[in-house]
Length: 372
Image 1 (cartoon, rainbow, N blue to C red):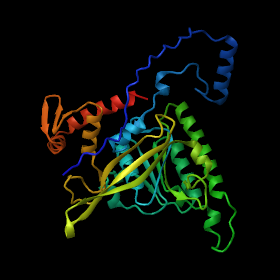
Image 2 (image 1 turned 30 degrees about the horizontal axis):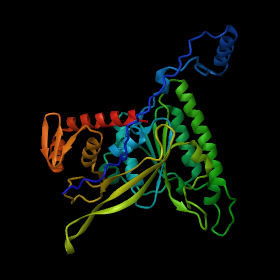
Image 3 (image 1 turned 90 degrees about the vertical axis):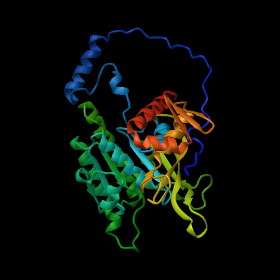
Image 4 (image 1 turned 90 degrees about the horizontal axis):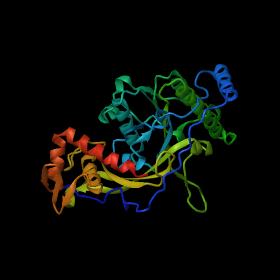
Protein backbone atom coordinates (compact mmCIF):
# COMPACT_ATOMS: atom_id res chain seq x y z
CA UNK A 1 0.00 0.00 0.00
CA UNK A 2 1.18 3.48 -0.77
CA UNK A 3 1.63 5.48 2.39
CA UNK A 4 1.15 9.24 2.43
CA UNK A 5 4.12 11.09 3.91
CA UNK A 6 4.39 14.69 4.97
CA UNK A 7 4.69 17.01 2.01
CA UNK A 8 8.21 18.22 1.22
CA UNK A 9 6.80 21.75 1.18
CA UNK A 10 6.44 22.52 4.88
CA UNK A 11 5.17 25.42 6.93
CA UNK A 12 3.82 27.38 4.00
CA UNK A 13 2.50 30.68 5.34
CA UNK A 14 0.62 33.40 3.54
CA UNK A 15 2.16 36.77 4.24
CA UNK A 16 -0.26 39.39 5.57
CA UNK A 17 2.19 42.28 5.28
CA UNK A 18 1.23 45.10 2.97
CA UNK A 19 3.87 45.88 0.39
CA UNK A 20 4.57 49.38 -0.83
CA UNK A 21 4.66 49.93 -4.56
CA UNK A 22 8.16 51.03 -5.63
CA UNK A 23 8.46 54.40 -7.28
CA UNK A 24 8.80 54.23 -11.03
CA UNK A 25 11.75 56.22 -12.31
CA UNK A 26 10.80 58.12 -15.42
CA UNK A 27 12.54 57.00 -18.58
CA UNK A 28 15.27 59.27 -19.80
CA UNK A 29 17.48 59.36 -22.86
CA UNK A 30 21.24 58.90 -22.71
CA UNK A 31 23.62 61.60 -23.81
CA UNK A 32 25.25 61.37 -27.27
CA UNK A 33 28.65 60.95 -25.60
CA UNK A 34 27.50 57.80 -23.77
CA UNK A 35 25.91 56.37 -26.94
CA UNK A 36 29.16 56.96 -28.82
CA UNK A 37 31.16 55.08 -26.18
CA UNK A 38 28.68 52.17 -26.32
CA UNK A 39 28.86 52.03 -30.13
CA UNK A 40 32.67 52.17 -30.11
CA UNK A 41 32.87 49.30 -27.59
CA UNK A 42 30.45 47.18 -29.63
CA UNK A 43 32.55 47.78 -32.75
CA UNK A 44 35.74 46.83 -30.91
CA UNK A 45 34.57 43.78 -28.97
CA UNK A 46 31.59 42.59 -31.04
CA UNK A 47 27.88 43.12 -31.38
CA UNK A 48 25.81 43.18 -28.16
CA UNK A 49 28.91 43.54 -25.97
CA UNK A 50 27.15 46.41 -24.22
CA UNK A 51 23.39 46.86 -24.41
CA UNK A 52 21.23 49.76 -23.31
CA UNK A 53 18.35 48.63 -21.14
CA UNK A 54 17.44 45.10 -20.03
CA UNK A 55 14.66 43.35 -21.90
CA UNK A 56 12.35 40.96 -20.07
CA UNK A 57 13.59 38.05 -22.20
CA UNK A 58 17.13 38.59 -20.91
CA UNK A 59 16.26 38.09 -17.25
CA UNK A 60 13.83 35.16 -17.49
CA UNK A 61 15.47 32.00 -16.14
CA UNK A 62 14.60 28.90 -18.11
CA UNK A 63 14.61 25.64 -16.19
CA UNK A 64 15.05 21.92 -16.82
CA UNK A 65 12.80 19.53 -14.81
CA UNK A 66 14.53 17.09 -12.47
CA UNK A 67 12.07 14.19 -12.63
CA UNK A 68 10.86 14.92 -9.08
CA UNK A 69 8.04 17.42 -8.57
CA UNK A 70 8.98 18.14 -4.95
CA UNK A 71 12.57 18.87 -6.01
CA UNK A 72 11.31 21.03 -8.90
CA UNK A 73 9.22 23.07 -6.44
CA UNK A 74 12.16 23.51 -4.07
CA UNK A 75 14.41 24.66 -6.93
CA UNK A 76 11.87 27.08 -8.34
CA UNK A 77 10.70 24.93 -11.27
CA UNK A 78 13.81 22.87 -12.02
CA UNK A 79 17.54 23.46 -12.43
CA UNK A 80 18.37 26.84 -14.02
CA UNK A 81 19.79 26.83 -17.54
CA UNK A 82 23.18 28.35 -18.21
CA UNK A 83 24.44 27.80 -14.66
CA UNK A 84 26.75 25.43 -12.82
CA UNK A 85 24.89 23.02 -10.52
CA UNK A 86 26.74 20.88 -8.00
CA UNK A 87 24.99 17.68 -6.90
CA UNK A 88 26.72 16.05 -3.94
CA UNK A 89 25.97 13.39 -1.37
CA UNK A 90 27.09 10.27 0.42
CA UNK A 91 27.58 6.96 -1.33
CA UNK A 92 24.35 5.38 -2.67
CA UNK A 93 22.39 8.61 -2.27
CA UNK A 94 21.28 8.31 -5.97
CA UNK A 95 23.42 11.25 -7.18
CA UNK A 96 24.14 9.81 -10.64
CA UNK A 97 20.65 8.35 -11.03
CA UNK A 98 18.92 11.64 -10.24
CA UNK A 99 21.31 13.43 -12.63
CA UNK A 100 20.34 10.99 -15.38
CA UNK A 101 16.70 11.89 -14.76
CA UNK A 102 17.66 15.50 -15.52
CA UNK A 103 19.50 14.34 -18.67
CA UNK A 104 16.35 12.52 -19.82
CA UNK A 105 14.18 15.59 -19.23
CA UNK A 106 16.70 17.81 -21.06
CA UNK A 107 16.64 15.50 -24.07
CA UNK A 108 12.84 15.74 -24.12
CA UNK A 109 13.30 19.50 -24.53
CA UNK A 110 15.50 18.85 -27.57
CA UNK A 111 18.83 19.60 -25.88
CA UNK A 112 22.09 17.87 -26.82
CA UNK A 113 23.79 16.41 -23.74
CA UNK A 114 27.42 15.46 -23.04
CA UNK A 115 28.09 12.96 -20.24
CA UNK A 116 31.70 12.61 -19.05
CA UNK A 117 31.88 9.42 -16.98
CA UNK A 118 35.14 9.99 -15.10
CA UNK A 119 34.32 7.30 -12.52
CA UNK A 120 33.57 4.75 -15.27
CA UNK A 121 30.50 3.37 -13.47
CA UNK A 122 27.82 3.86 -16.15
CA UNK A 123 26.81 1.58 -19.00
CA UNK A 124 24.34 1.36 -21.88
CA UNK A 125 21.75 -0.69 -19.97
CA UNK A 126 21.85 1.76 -17.05
CA UNK A 127 21.18 4.77 -19.30
CA UNK A 128 18.40 3.02 -21.21
CA UNK A 129 16.63 1.97 -18.00
CA UNK A 130 16.55 5.65 -17.01
CA UNK A 131 15.03 6.66 -20.34
CA UNK A 132 18.15 8.39 -21.69
CA UNK A 133 18.38 8.44 -25.49
CA UNK A 134 21.86 6.96 -25.93
CA UNK A 135 21.80 7.32 -29.73
CA UNK A 136 22.47 11.06 -29.47
CA UNK A 137 24.25 11.17 -26.10
CA UNK A 138 27.83 12.47 -26.27
CA UNK A 139 29.70 10.09 -23.98
CA UNK A 140 33.31 10.03 -22.82
CA UNK A 141 35.51 8.38 -20.19
CA UNK A 142 38.35 10.93 -19.90
CA UNK A 143 41.60 9.70 -18.37
CA UNK A 144 42.69 13.05 -16.91
CA UNK A 145 41.33 16.29 -15.53
CA UNK A 146 42.87 18.20 -18.43
CA UNK A 147 41.10 16.00 -20.97
CA UNK A 148 37.74 16.29 -19.19
CA UNK A 149 37.81 20.06 -18.74
CA UNK A 150 39.20 20.89 -22.19
CA UNK A 151 36.74 18.50 -23.85
CA UNK A 152 33.81 20.11 -22.03
CA UNK A 153 34.98 23.61 -22.99
CA UNK A 154 35.31 22.66 -26.67
CA UNK A 155 31.77 21.25 -26.71
CA UNK A 156 30.52 24.41 -25.02
CA UNK A 157 32.25 26.68 -27.55
CA UNK A 158 30.55 24.85 -30.41
CA UNK A 159 27.22 26.27 -29.29
CA UNK A 160 25.50 23.00 -30.22
CA UNK A 161 25.73 21.20 -26.86
CA UNK A 162 23.55 22.73 -24.14
CA UNK A 163 24.04 20.43 -21.12
CA UNK A 164 27.18 18.82 -19.75
CA UNK A 165 27.62 16.37 -16.88
CA UNK A 166 30.87 15.50 -15.08
CA UNK A 167 30.65 12.37 -12.94
CA UNK A 168 32.43 13.06 -10.72
CA UNK A 169 34.56 16.11 -9.88
CA UNK A 170 36.34 14.24 -7.07
CA UNK A 171 37.44 11.51 -9.52
CA UNK A 172 39.21 13.80 -12.01
CA UNK A 173 42.99 13.28 -11.86
CA UNK A 174 45.54 15.85 -13.11
CA UNK A 175 48.22 14.54 -15.48
CA UNK A 176 50.97 15.43 -13.02
CA UNK A 177 49.37 13.21 -10.40
CA UNK A 178 48.53 10.38 -12.81
CA UNK A 179 52.08 10.21 -14.20
CA UNK A 180 53.83 10.25 -10.81
CA UNK A 181 54.64 7.21 -8.72
CA UNK A 182 52.66 6.39 -5.61
CA UNK A 183 55.52 7.28 -3.25
CA UNK A 184 56.34 10.57 -4.94
CA UNK A 185 55.19 13.85 -3.45
CA UNK A 186 52.84 15.79 -5.69
CA UNK A 187 52.48 19.55 -5.25
CA UNK A 188 49.23 20.37 -3.49
CA UNK A 189 46.48 22.46 -5.09
CA UNK A 190 46.86 21.32 -8.71
CA UNK A 191 43.22 20.12 -9.10
CA UNK A 192 41.90 23.29 -7.49
CA UNK A 193 43.99 25.52 -9.78
CA UNK A 194 42.86 23.66 -12.88
CA UNK A 195 39.21 23.84 -11.83
CA UNK A 196 39.56 27.56 -11.13
CA UNK A 197 40.88 28.12 -14.66
CA UNK A 198 38.17 25.88 -16.10
CA UNK A 199 35.30 27.75 -14.44
CA UNK A 200 36.67 31.14 -15.50
CA UNK A 201 36.81 29.98 -19.13
CA UNK A 202 33.40 28.29 -18.83
CA UNK A 203 31.72 31.50 -17.67
CA UNK A 204 33.50 33.54 -20.34
CA UNK A 205 32.21 31.15 -23.02
CA UNK A 206 28.67 31.39 -21.63
CA UNK A 207 28.79 35.18 -21.75
CA UNK A 208 29.80 34.98 -25.42
CA UNK A 209 27.01 32.51 -26.22
CA UNK A 210 24.43 34.80 -24.62
CA UNK A 211 25.75 37.73 -26.64
CA UNK A 212 25.31 35.74 -29.82
CA UNK A 213 21.73 34.85 -28.91
CA UNK A 214 22.53 31.15 -28.36
CA UNK A 215 21.46 28.90 -25.51
CA UNK A 216 24.00 29.13 -22.64
CA UNK A 217 25.73 25.96 -21.50
CA UNK A 218 24.39 24.26 -18.36
CA UNK A 219 26.94 22.25 -16.37
CA UNK A 220 26.19 19.65 -13.69
CA UNK A 221 29.06 18.52 -11.53
CA UNK A 222 28.42 15.41 -9.45
CA UNK A 223 30.62 15.39 -6.37
CA UNK A 224 31.38 13.24 -3.37
CA UNK A 225 30.67 14.30 0.20
CA UNK A 226 33.70 13.92 2.45
CA UNK A 227 34.66 14.83 6.03
CA UNK A 228 37.58 16.79 7.39
CA UNK A 229 39.60 15.15 10.16
CA UNK A 230 39.40 16.90 13.52
CA UNK A 231 37.48 19.88 12.17
CA UNK A 232 35.33 22.19 14.28
CA UNK A 233 31.77 22.82 13.20
CA UNK A 234 30.45 21.07 10.10
CA UNK A 235 33.18 18.63 8.96
CA UNK A 236 31.53 17.84 5.60
CA UNK A 237 32.92 19.28 2.39
CA UNK A 238 33.08 18.56 -1.34
CA UNK A 239 36.46 18.30 -3.16
CA UNK A 240 37.39 20.85 -5.81
CA UNK A 241 38.34 24.01 -4.00
CA UNK A 242 36.65 27.35 -3.44
CA UNK A 243 36.30 28.37 -7.10
CA UNK A 244 33.76 25.59 -7.58
CA UNK A 245 31.68 26.88 -4.67
CA UNK A 246 31.64 30.48 -5.91
CA UNK A 247 30.79 29.62 -9.52
CA UNK A 248 27.91 27.29 -8.59
CA UNK A 249 24.40 28.75 -8.75
CA UNK A 250 22.81 25.71 -7.11
CA UNK A 251 24.32 23.37 -4.55
CA UNK A 252 22.06 20.35 -4.10
CA UNK A 253 22.90 17.80 -1.42
CA UNK A 254 21.29 14.34 -1.36
CA UNK A 255 21.16 11.92 1.55
CA UNK A 256 19.90 8.40 2.15
CA UNK A 257 16.68 8.16 4.13
CA UNK A 258 14.79 5.15 5.47
CA UNK A 259 14.57 1.92 3.51
CA UNK A 260 11.28 1.08 1.81
CA UNK A 261 10.43 -2.53 2.61
CA UNK A 262 7.67 -4.93 1.62
CA UNK A 263 6.65 -8.29 3.04
CA UNK A 264 7.03 -9.65 6.55
CA UNK A 265 9.33 -12.02 8.37
CA UNK A 266 11.51 -14.11 6.07
CA UNK A 267 9.75 -12.60 3.04
CA UNK A 268 10.66 -9.03 3.98
CA UNK A 269 12.57 -7.35 1.19
CA UNK A 270 14.09 -3.90 0.64
CA UNK A 271 12.66 -2.48 -2.60
CA UNK A 272 13.64 1.19 -2.34
CA UNK A 273 14.69 4.07 -0.17
CA UNK A 274 13.62 7.56 0.80
CA UNK A 275 15.89 10.19 -0.75
CA UNK A 276 16.25 13.39 1.28
CA UNK A 277 17.49 16.59 -0.31
CA UNK A 278 18.68 19.97 0.89
CA UNK A 279 19.47 22.92 -1.34
CA UNK A 280 22.49 24.47 0.37
CA UNK A 281 22.81 27.29 -2.16
CA UNK A 282 20.45 28.72 -4.77
CA UNK A 283 21.13 32.03 -6.53
CA UNK A 284 17.95 31.77 -8.61
CA UNK A 285 15.31 30.94 -5.95
CA UNK A 286 14.80 30.41 -2.22
CA UNK A 287 17.73 28.65 -0.60
CA UNK A 288 17.91 26.07 2.19
CA UNK A 289 14.81 24.24 0.94
CA UNK A 290 14.45 20.63 2.10
CA UNK A 291 12.27 17.69 1.17
CA UNK A 292 12.16 14.00 0.33
CA UNK A 293 10.76 11.53 -2.17
CA UNK A 294 10.54 7.76 -2.61
CA UNK A 295 13.01 6.03 -4.92
CA UNK A 296 12.74 2.38 -6.00
CA UNK A 297 15.58 0.15 -7.18
CA UNK A 298 13.52 -3.06 -7.43
CA UNK A 299 10.75 -3.82 -9.93
CA UNK A 300 8.92 -5.96 -7.36
CA UNK A 301 7.12 -3.18 -5.48
CA UNK A 302 3.44 -2.65 -4.78
CA UNK A 303 3.64 1.02 -5.85
CA UNK A 304 4.10 -0.07 -9.47
CA UNK A 305 7.18 2.13 -9.93
CA UNK A 306 9.85 1.02 -12.39
CA UNK A 307 13.33 0.27 -11.06
CA UNK A 308 15.65 3.33 -10.79
CA UNK A 309 12.66 5.71 -10.82
CA UNK A 310 11.04 8.00 -8.24
CA UNK A 311 7.42 7.56 -7.18
CA UNK A 312 6.23 10.59 -9.15
CA UNK A 313 2.52 9.82 -8.83
CA UNK A 314 2.65 9.79 -5.04
CA UNK A 315 4.71 13.00 -5.10
CA UNK A 316 2.20 14.74 -7.35
CA UNK A 317 -0.76 13.82 -5.13
CA UNK A 318 1.00 14.87 -1.90
CA UNK A 319 2.17 18.19 -3.36
CA UNK A 320 -1.18 18.88 -5.03
CA UNK A 321 -3.01 18.38 -1.70
CA UNK A 322 -0.50 20.64 0.04
CA UNK A 323 -1.01 23.44 -2.47
CA UNK A 324 -4.79 23.06 -2.70
CA UNK A 325 -4.93 21.80 -6.28
CA UNK A 326 -6.47 18.53 -5.06
CA UNK A 327 -8.95 18.70 -2.18
CA UNK A 328 -8.83 16.03 0.50
CA UNK A 329 -11.65 15.24 2.91
CA UNK A 330 -10.73 12.31 5.09
CA UNK A 331 -10.12 9.34 2.82
CA UNK A 332 -11.68 11.08 -0.21
CA UNK A 333 -9.79 13.09 -2.84
CA UNK A 334 -11.46 15.58 -5.18
CA UNK A 335 -10.07 17.07 -8.39
CA UNK A 336 -12.44 19.03 -10.62
CA UNK A 337 -15.32 16.60 -11.33
CA UNK A 338 -13.41 13.53 -10.15
CA UNK A 339 -14.00 11.87 -6.78
CA UNK A 340 -11.64 9.15 -5.48
CA UNK A 341 -11.75 7.05 -2.34
CA UNK A 342 -8.20 6.59 -1.10
CA UNK A 343 -4.90 7.70 -2.59
CA UNK A 344 -4.45 4.39 -4.45
CA UNK A 345 -7.58 4.89 -6.56
CA UNK A 346 -6.47 8.43 -7.45
CA UNK A 347 -2.98 7.23 -8.41
CA UNK A 348 -4.46 4.44 -10.56
CA UNK A 349 -6.51 7.00 -12.46
CA UNK A 350 -3.48 9.28 -12.91
CA UNK A 351 -1.49 6.41 -14.43
CA UNK A 352 -4.19 6.02 -17.09
CA UNK A 353 -4.40 9.76 -17.85
CA UNK A 354 -0.98 11.35 -18.49
CA UNK A 355 -2.66 14.60 -19.59
CA UNK A 356 -4.22 14.85 -16.10
CA UNK A 357 -0.79 14.44 -14.51
CA UNK A 358 0.66 17.25 -16.65
CA UNK A 359 -2.27 19.50 -15.79
CA UNK A 360 -1.93 18.97 -12.02
CA UNK A 361 1.85 19.29 -12.12
CA UNK A 362 1.69 22.58 -14.01
CA UNK A 363 -0.80 24.05 -11.55
CA UNK A 364 1.31 23.02 -8.54
CA UNK A 365 4.55 24.37 -10.02
CA UNK A 366 2.88 27.67 -10.99
CA UNK A 367 1.43 28.12 -7.49
CA UNK A 368 4.61 27.15 -5.68
CA UNK A 369 7.01 29.26 -7.73
CA UNK A 370 4.94 32.43 -7.35
CA UNK A 371 5.95 32.56 -3.68
CA UNK A 372 9.59 33.51 -3.45
